[in-house]
Length: 154
Image 1: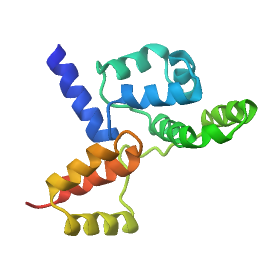
Image 2 (image 1 turned 90 degrees about the horizontal axis):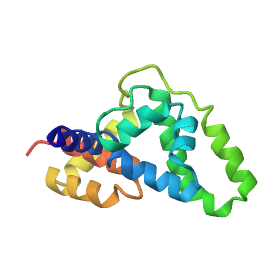
Image 3 (image 1 turned 120 degrees about the vertical axis):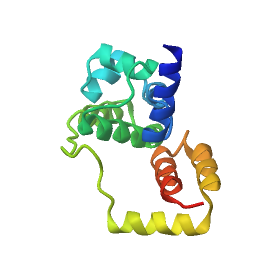
Image 4 (image 1 turned 135 degrees about the horizontal axis):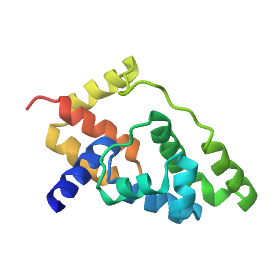
């Protein structure tokens, strides 16, 4: 089973830029949330969140939950400049974020242009290395670099 968990965590890294445990730890630490409160804010059951964080499950199935997680990660950067009341209101507002019903994101023209530029600028190994370096603080950018590396030839 540990092999399955290792594979699941690797897939989470590909999907989200890093394992969900690392993302959740950053959010909980910076925003002062418990795991239960994080589950509530994301719109997940506590057992489901636990399975995702432990690597027993790989993927968040609901796009709205993924968007809420990214909204919380963006809030992490803003949190130091907010009062406790403002932070609480912003966390509450995240719960209302709705996702799309698409199971996969479509690539916009501007994103496709960025991917093409990245592929021209660096080889896949360099793109993956840069993604690893950025994963902790810039998961969305890290994910874009990984996407560019996956589509690169060579």
